[in-house]
Image (cartoon, rainbow, N blue to C red; front, top):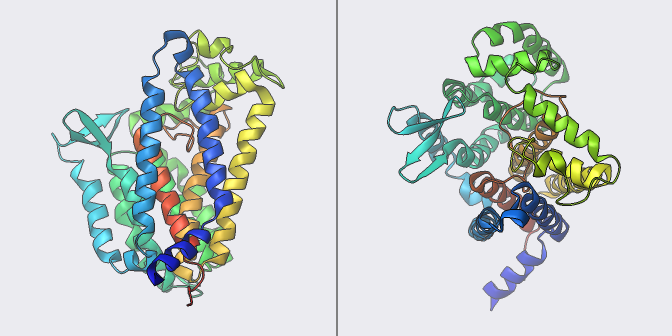
Length: 372
């Protein structure tokens, strides 16, 4: 009976506003996805069913994650660290790792390919938060900062080796969010920004050819011969033609006639802009703002600093992905293969998003001590 009452009280402490917001984003995305995949024309709803199944599996993953106190998971941060590095390293072995879009980021499982970095996002957050927790209020000089930086370097290095710059930036945002929350000195933050800006030309020199092409395209947006510019041009045409209220669901010409590339995943926001206009885009951005705001609230209410860091890490990951995906569709940011959370088509990215949401809910439901 006591265990039953404890479970009920934990469930009541879940942030239902956050859960409802995610359901609204996913439901909205599923409708837009049906248009982006032209399911209403072909009658083939396989991708919709697959996305729905992935969501269902993700819900089961959330339930599994909620069964374990996040502090219990944190006890194994060293093991999580090692497993995470192995998952990133194994795909670099020829014959095991599969190449997609110029990056060897996928684990070849016969009929299926799995992007290991998606799982590592979750394990890295659990592991890195434990390291940063011990440095709270002490990140005022290089002597204190270097251990936490060195801890993260192998992850960034392995992602560059793939090379997967987009995911490396995601991890960098997770790291930056946690360090800032732990009290990283503002002067050091300014110096880091200056250092990054100064080293940008050197970073360009060591980039993979396909990454250089994306940077060149971003710097020359009016040149359709640059790889990636065609996608962005079609995206901007689609969004611009949508106007305030859009052309109507399933009536977007750029989308329905096949001019808009990768419209079901990378450029699905352009589908929203063309068919639902400024109103639709504002609604999505508003839902994401509420989504991120709820996580800020949960981070503040966490019962310990470890929980706060976990939520901040997840929030930083989502914030970057949202900004990057929307930004690239309107030519404000170079194109990368970053999907729009809970909306873009893709089982592995959806599962990862839901699993990380599970971490946030785990912290949320245990923010108060249960007394009897």
